[in-house]
Amino acid sequence: MTTNILTQTPQPDLHLLENNLGYHFRDLGHLQKAMIHSSHAFEQGRPTQQNNETLEFLGDAVLDLTVGYALFRYFPRMREGDLTRLRAALVNERHLARMARDLDLGRYLLLGKGEETNRGREKPSLLSCALEAVAGAIFLDGGYLAASEFVERHFTPWFDDRQQTMFLADAKSSLQELLQERFNEGPRYVLEGDEGPDHNKTFHVSVRFREEILGQGSARSKKEAEQEAAAVALKNLAKPPAQAGQ
Image 1 (tube, rainbow, N blue to C red):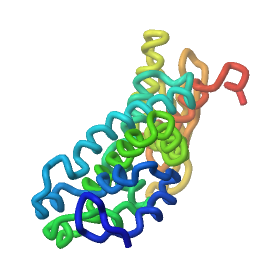
Image 2: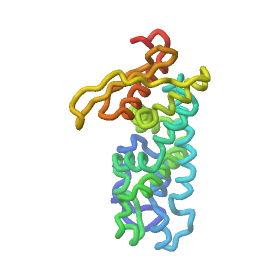
Image 3: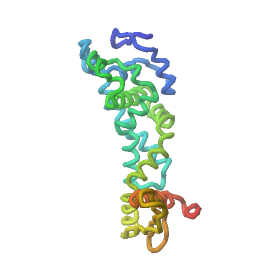
Image 4: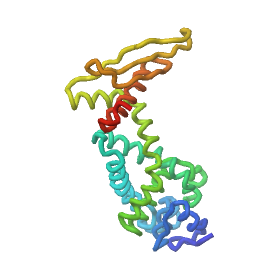
């Protein structure tokens, strides 16, 4: 246990949290501040600047830049609209809270009695804000390079997963936008067939553009099969020409 220099409240050993983050602070006070929720500071009669809200503000901007730049490098052929949607999928409250749980951030938060009683350590809003505050603290302590390395370590492993989820959720819209932008025409979906009993059918759909099959998909409904075909088409169109037919 360590005593936070900004409060008199004992806190779990922040060196363990540093190990989880993969970053060791020059000034541990930055990390300590990132873990102070406003409810705790208020109960202690501390000034507003002695909670994590300003670090959260900074971290929000840091993640937008560092995650955005990492996506720009990892997906050089991806369209601007898709890059924007993918970044949003990575830095939204739900995903940041999931990452915060993986890092065990909730254990280290200093909360007011009310938030503690209301299971604040499990709230997505508090956890996501805490992770943004940590990103801000790392930037403040080690600069852009340290923040970028933090993103490389913890966010890039999610890139393919979030990309697949995003494309499957809205693949038809993305494909429509892409083809309209490039050729001023949209795709056409063709039901190639179905199989199975009426209560458990599997539909096979292809998506075509100017009679060329861009992708194929199979699912329990026509709509899901069309989304899957569109997702396959997007992946094929994102490949360099030499790989598109592979």
